[in-house]
Structures are given as structure tokens and as C-alpha cells.
Image 1 (spheres, rainbow, N blue to C red):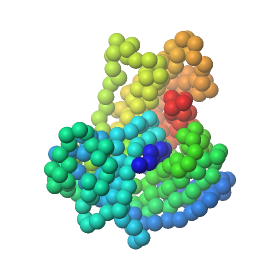
Image 2 (tube, rainbow, N blue to C red):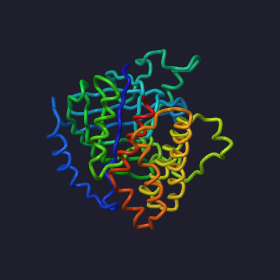
Image 3 (cartoon, helix red, strand yellow):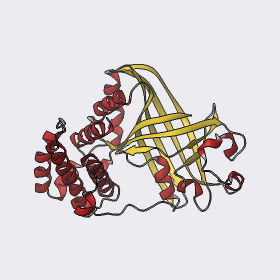
Length: 324
């Protein structure tokens, strides 16, 4: 077992003003400033499995078989933590025999007590697939080893297909703090935004099995009062990023007020935190000017703002503060 700790970025939609085909040049410049220990690329084909009634999804597990020219392995990812694009999940890998994963090959301790593993195994069916070229670089950074992977390909489900164009930073050895500082450096590159959803989450949606992205209001003030300032900041970040996805992926700017509401909650909760004696983080200085700026933007200005790198760096600074 290993705990996968990674941060995902999506290459911005060209409609937002940053052509995806320029990412190769930007990435070359970024990598030339780093110590790259190793570099390779591989074509990967992945099939994700679940039962027809989504028993694994209810357990917050993801199951796949991954194949390339040189290897085939089965992987199951278990319930973990997610925070605004930073993901930490236990995962188990092993060799695969045949066309279906073998659940009995994974440790018995990962299953809830009383789970009928034989019935679960018999009910497994393919749900969707992802196929992509992965270019990856192993980077030495602040005493850690971090893999930067660039995945380009597609997700295919029964309801359609969707492009994959993602950068992922995965911690191989060292501290999560090092991962976060490298992420802030990468996030300053124009043309990226944080990827909140995994390939599996996107795949379930394309298979007709996932929840649609819809706007959602913040809880009422009375419900928020039961949360600590840090919990409110985490909720505000989730609100911001959820509605950012709607604005960008669905080109639906009607979600903009809910996005701004998430930012306003972050500012209010941080003010409360400081009033309670917690030191103000450096990113606190950006909140009031940012909210004032957003209040003045027309729709074209809002679209331009969604393509900027400085707000991505702000998200990463908030994530690092919450994660510590």
C-alpha cells in the first residue's frame, strides 16, 4: 500500500485565451529551471470497473486495470482526503491476470466488515476508459522527489468522450510541504487551473453515472456558525472551485455570483480567525482588493479573470495554509 499525494492542474481551454499548444514551450522553460532526475513517456490504456449499481463508488473506491506495452496492473484507490485539487488517497497495486480485476488479490482489510467479496467480484463490469500519452519527469525539489506528469488523451464513456490535458505533481518521496511549494511555482505559469475532479470522477459522469455540475448556494449563516473558521475557509474554497468549473467547463457565467460568495466566505472566516488570535497568512492581503476587483468586472472581464495565473497561486496558498 502507498498513499498517493498529488496535485492536479488542467490546461486552460483555448477559449479562455491561452492556447493549449503553447504549454509545451512553457513547460520546457519551467523544467529547465529545475533538477530533473529522470524523464520518460508511455502510452497508457485504463479501464475502470464497478458493479451496475455502483457498489465501489458508494465505498468511495476506484478500481482500474492499466496497460501499456511493458506492463499491466490492477489498482484500487480507497477513501482519502481532498482539498481544492490536492488529493491524498491510499492505493494498492498488483499484477493482473485476465480481463477483469481480481478483488481477492487486494488486502482483506480494505473491505467493510461483512462485505460479500465473491458477489462483488461476480458483478464487476467495465464502466469507462481513459487512454492517454503520459510524459513524466522526476524532479528533485527541497529534499523531496516529485513526479511531474503531463497526460494528453481522452476519457470515453457511453454518453460521449472528453479530452484529457492535465499536469499532475505526485509526491514520490519527502514532505507534502515540498509538493505544495513546487505546485505554487508551477501554478504561476499562465494557462493552468487546479483540477478538482479526478479522471475517474469525469469518467463516471461520461458513463452517465455521475452527478451533473449544478450551481449550489452556501449553507445558511446559522449552519455556518457551527463550523470553525478553518472549516469555513475550506467550504469557501470548495464553493469557489465548484462554480469555477461551471463557468469554465459549461461556459455558464450564471454561476459567477456563487463563485464570488465562496471568496467572500473565505475573507469573512479569515477575519474571524485572526480576531481569535491566529496569525494572518500572507495571502490575507490579497482578499479585500480581489473582492473589490471582482465586483467591478463585466462578463468579458470575468472570463479573462478565469484565465489568470494569480488566482491559481492564491488557491494554492490557501490549500497550503489549510493543509499545515
